[in-house]
Image (cartoon, rainbow, N blue to C red):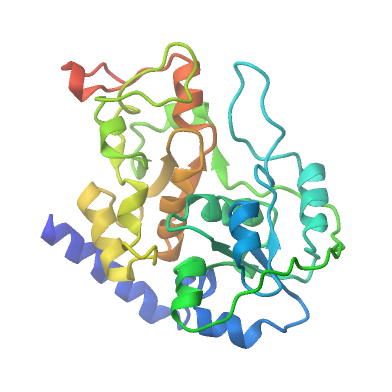
Length: 307
């Protein structure tokens, strides 16, 4: 394990030396940077949290993302819980939050877990913002800890101006995952907690007959393993060790899933900061189970062959 982690880290160091700026430099910002740029005309700050915690104190100028916002309307009975909206609907939602074509967007988590915030980063990336959308490292807690003030005043509404959005290919579907389970250079990563991965517990968002276990051959990288207890993203070396220990090899194309497509975005985000080519299996295990596709269930004994 330690040897593979060292090789993975060394490969990242070589890549970093070839490029002065790393993906982490644009994807992650610190509180002091945000404070220095808070008055930039094109900066949009988005608060990922509840109306109650927004009202209790938020970063000045931040806009509250509506709960369930930047996602498709709730699915009908039997449908998926969380999906990207259409390009047209996403354009409307972003404009309502003050996002324009030239905006630089910073997203922060109000609580101590980041998946809801990284889901927003993923969505903005899919909308074409790429390196113009970043996550605030440590979220609101780090902002306060570093001595920056909060506000209880709601930021005045101001609509943005966006041209038509073309959704970028940042996700894969069940057919793609199934077709690449044994393809050289492709790795499936399960971002759920270990009790779901090992089949000792079924997820709650899978319908009437939830499956236990994981997608055949998937590696386990729980979403909680990529952050510190303070909700800071772990260092590049620490993240490289996490992925290497799970069996992700240098140069792998990674497909990440979780229950419904939210927790996995934290692992997706961490992978992107390392320069790993990673995509989200949106719909995730809920979709996989609904399609009655094969799983490996360590808690039940022998695993079925991938089909």
